[in-house]
Length: 194
Image (tube, rainbow, N blue to C red; front, side, top):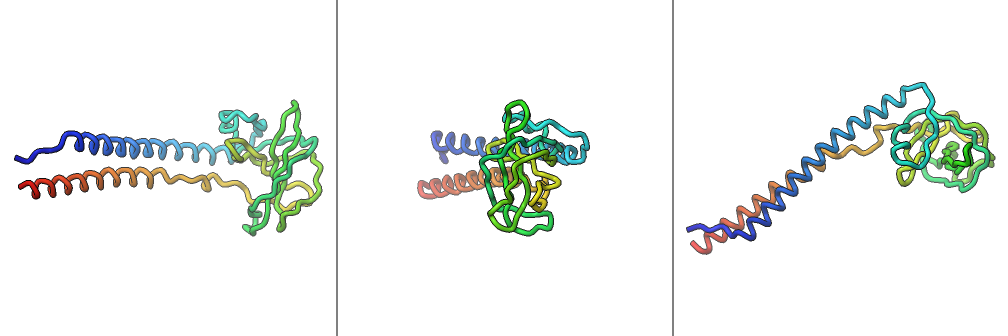
């Protein structure tokens, strides 16, 4: 009589169900991401300006890829990172922390230069697109750029990774492989005891 080990079978079934659950979750995330990207594309075409958000993640999410204007009253904490200009040329984009109205701060991507040194810009009125920044925050990508800078490449919602379908397929594949391996192990066990 071919007997199936209860403990091992329970563990394999639990693992397979978990992997299937993760695959379904990734499919749900795929739908969420697609809706989010449509929302961002719509936001980019909205000509009405939004207020620059606080650090609250929900407030940031609501205004990403919308236009805004801030009055950069003072600058501090320059950060130069690799980036591209509107001609897709590699170089550096320069992000500065600005003091704005209401005793708040805003990260402003003032523009692009070919080297890591940035022009000596002391602030002023800046308009541009709100884009994601470190840790779920926001930055205002100046458009037009601040004086002395070249325009940075505009943010594109399509650059946001959307690989949830690949992850879902991967989890379903793992579940299938686990079942095949367990089936082969049972078959071998039965043959050895046969």
